[in-house]
Amino acid sequence: MKGGIEFALIMLFGMMFCAVAIGLIGVLTQLHDARLLQETIVSTIEHHSNEQISGKLENQKICLLCSYQIELQQDHRVLVTVLFPIRIPVIDYRTFGKISAMTTPIK
Image 1 (cartoon, rainbow, N blue to C red):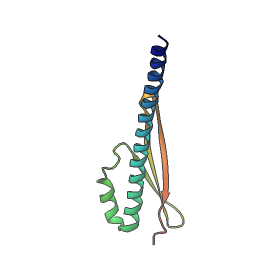
Image 2: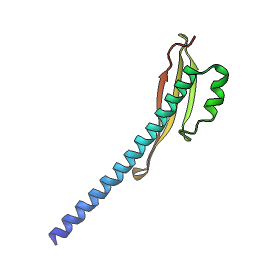
Image 3: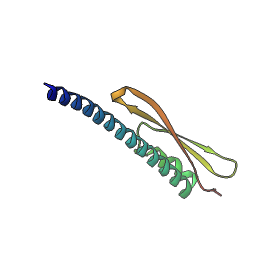
């Protein structure tokens, strides 16, 4: 009887740990997709002319749930901010993450 209770407790906590770990892997995947979108936008801005940028950015299918904002800074740099959802379904946690990057000076 004692062994059965110990086994049940180990399985309960072990499965709970596995479920949370899978949720955290999902968060890492969401962060990776948002970072890839951000780096793609920065690279597109740095290596293409103004006419080509809007067409290339509209066709991005990297992170469908992400939104981005592009701001021109005073020192001829562009600030790219990506907002992405963070969800951990096991504990019903939902929020948004934000990452930002600047381009090299654009002339």
